[in-house]
Amino acid sequence: MVVTIKDVAKKANVAPSTVSRVIADSSRISEKTKKRVRKIMDELGYHPNMNARSLANQTTQAIGLVMPSSAGKAFQNPFFPEVIRGISSFSHIKSYSLYMSTGETEQEIYEGVVKMVQGRRVDGIVLLYSRIDDPVIQYLIEQQFPFVLIGKPHQSTGEVTYIDNDNYLAGRELTEYFISLGHKRLAFIGGSPDLMVTKERLAGFKEALKLADLPMSDDYIVYMEFLREGGERAVEQLLSLEQPPSAIIVTDDLMALGVLSTLTEKGYAVPDRISVASFNNVIFSEISCPPLTSVDVRIFQLGYEAAKSLVEKIESPELPPKSILVPYKIVKRQSCKEYLEG
Image (cartoon, rainbow, N blue to C red):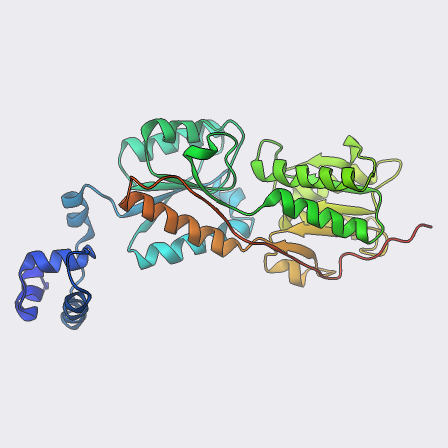
């Protein structure tokens, strides 16, 4: 037997409209009544028809997730499952489902977003990356469609709600840590140069070198994809230099795994000959060989705060844009050591 709103209303001795308002978590209904009605819904095994609700409210109860590249590539990197876990955790509390959009090219990603917006498939969007001059952000601003960015916007900072770490400061601090260990030849392996996360961490790296009065060579800055193979190719390039670096900062743990395995293969002991540090502090940074010094950016919290901010925007469109900085910390492990000349 299918339990209806009327059955719940009858047993709770309230009007069916009151039950509807309890389902919608309306502020017009007291907490006491909400508790009582929800208890009866549980007892009768009543589950609200989300499709019917969506039609009535002109909402979808869905959040769109936009990945930076194809799902196949993105999901190789533990950052994305973990950030989605954070988004999912808050969405679940508010009964929002997740709708994912990916594309092989920037054009495909853009078209996927247009379909989500025009087709009203979602109530709002979380962008899981931040890119320089991204047409997706411009489009969402023009459409006045609710969205939140994980990362720092390149422009329109005052118009965009975003969740980020202070990547500039984190890049600077990690570089200063290497400098304090006596390293003078420092290399930087970044993701794509048009990603804001690469830009910000590199700016911090350069500033630390400048403050320490250390030379900075473009040969020591390499850009690759956020994949293990990217790290492998980048470190091969650095090792081919006349004077390889004594320390390498990698902007992503998955790339750093490729760096570690290639260094071992080529006979460069870590950290005895070359020290390595990275970002994200995903699970395998603890179990890599050697365990990797990594900046914990609290990936889960980035996702959770993004979903929370988006739902706030969906439910209260008049709220002004805001930025949330999630704290980070450097987790020091065995992949770095003091550098002694000679």
